Image (tube, rainbow, N blue to C red):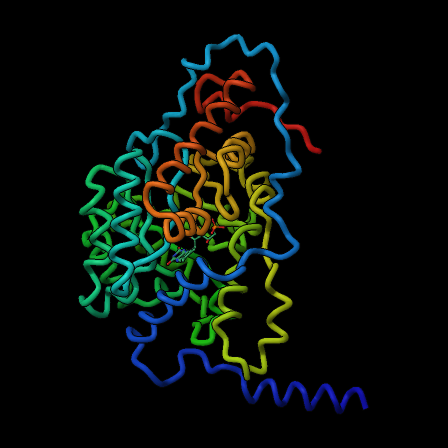
Length: 372
Ligand SMILES: Cc1cc2nc3c(=O)[nH]c(=O)nc-3n(C[C@H](O)[C@H](O)[C@H](O)COP(=O)(O)O)c2cc1C
């Protein structure tokens, strides 16, 4: 009986499995509405991990009652992609490719230019197909001429020779300082129109690296990078690893909210809402690779305060990055509120540094954390 039932269920489910890359609207049109949905859902809906956390709450700083430094001497300055930045935080890759994204990228860029912080634009895949929305990406560079700015493309795209042949256009389009490649197999799998074909991605990365002329950053989008994945990427010549771990925005969650109500797979996909490696765990496992390889380690996925930025560095990262928490502040409270929040995060990093006796960012990377 049970066997018959499960056979019936799986037959029904399989019959309604979304056909990836299915026909319908042209790809570029689908991308426009998808990018818009992503921003709207990330701002207005509960798309965080439900049970799993980034794990930063399991660590506490060892208070140093004898710091022997002056708070006014504490400097949060560091560098990223060869540019000086005011404190170790990037506004992560988010958007571009539909009309309203121009304003978002302009406002994020203006804040980054004024605070000397790096920023990424969202996936430029659609920009390779048509020029209509190029200005929505270009707004970032136009309003932030001096920051470290990163271009963006999905990993599965890099497996396509036609995309690889044109990749330099994405960098030129925004005068980017690096190309960010996002690895998002979970998101593609959950996405109604996703493309879960990840064959040839690593070889694609290795191929473009030789000819690109700017560094390659590889990130996840909230499910994290394991030590073995990081090692394979480093062996392929990647110079910046951004863990984008679990505990912040759940991209399985975002895509499930986009799924149609009658999607028969959705109830089964919900079990993947919390899938992924917590950000703090990714850092702890990848950081030791620094003994063998020269690379920049970025902590992201659920970073929502300056104290978490500081914990990331104490766990071995060189930088942190944050996406949805900052987008929410911008969209709900405006540009001034975003600038105030970022200055608040910078103050928190500086306060942690004073209270642990770390006078510069390099020293913060070796302060002691206790597990609680
Ligand atoms: C609205 C939105 C759109 C995003 N689009 C992209 C994208 O196009 N490319 C990318 O690499 N990451 C994208 N991300 C993922 C983020 O860069 C980040 O890795 C992820 O959200 C986890 O960080 P968080 O917990 O701080 O949000 C997007 C995030 C948000 C909130």
